[in-house]
Image (cartoon, rainbow, N blue to C red; front, side, top):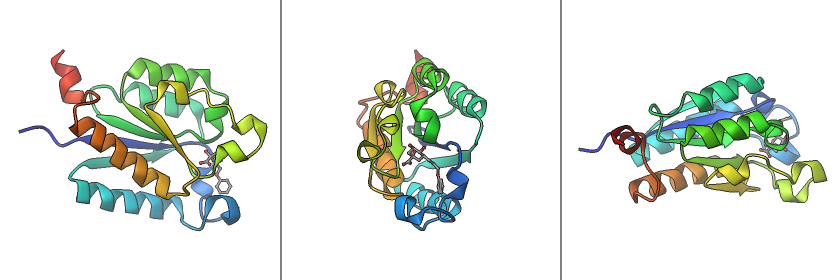
Length: 160
Ligand code: CA2
């Protein structure tokens, strides 16, 4: 029997403020609520999910870097590091763990500096502008791809 898929959800700087400031941009749900909803969705999908948040670039780089062999996929909202971090892009590319980039707001419709993502090109794809529902969309997309064998799970990578 195939192992239960394990997905890592990473949130970057200032996302601990979700639901507490700027609701017109980021909505009313708190990060805790987003994580609870993802845990519920994971149970529905029959997968495991682990959620982490950090304001520190190095934490995100370390977590992505150590995901290989432990997680089958990553949902990544790197927040402002999306637009600045070559280190995070290199970590995503180097880990070889299928990653979906998420943005709560529609970054394409915001300031010019938000319209460049350093990480998107090394991700499977990007979901932006659907509010916090984007996290669930990303989780479903990853699970679908992994189950279809379109991308390799940690189990498959370990057997290589
Ligand atoms: O839309 C997104 O998800 C972003 O990744 C959010 C980042 C921003 O820098 C990106 O350009 C787009 C900002 C996260 C800060 O989160 C806050 C939440 C509530 C109040 C203030 C900040």
